[in-house]
Image (tube, rainbow, N blue to C red):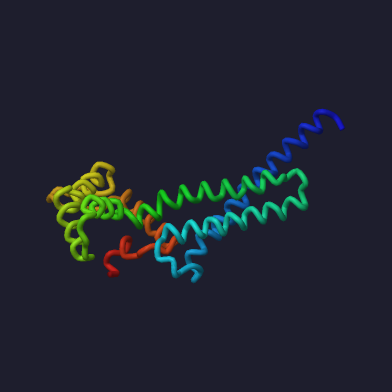
Amino acid sequence: MTKTSKSGGTAGNVFGLIGIYILIYLVCSVMFVGLFHTGILKNMEVLMYRGIAFIVITGIIAAVVMGVIRKFWGFITVRDIIMMFVIFCCVNTVLFVLVPVTVERSVSVFMLSYMEENSDQTFTQESVGEVFTSKYVTDYGAFEKRFNEQIETGTIKQNPDGTYSITESGKFIVSAFRTVAEWFDTDRRLVYPNEN
């Protein structure tokens, strides 16, 4: 075998391996999203925990599939099997935490921080809700800040009569969030307020 054919074979193996990684990643990512629409681990009410469990499950499936493919293509090594699991879990954990978990848990940091600063007290659910409304929404201007952000980013616009309307950009963002909410089975009331 010539040096050229060897290098050609090596390049083909590399491109083939990249293709396998991408295909397994995409298929198992679809499986990951699909698990949210099953009854599996439905007793886990915390979206973060359920999602991480699904990532590990589908990551193991991805590694097993890579192991099966190894039986047919000898250039795949044990390292590739491990890398498939690691890459799948890392990428999907980042995406999962950045989008659906952020949407689901945006109030948690304030609530926990307030209770920690006042840990010498006990609270009722109603009292924490009142604090959230009075401090986070009113005193900290949370609503005004978010409203003005939307004007700056162009998702809402001011009309000549002083009222406001959502823009096409805003509608696109809402559509994207609704898609994410449906994929990961999060609380629909946040993206469909009129249904409550």
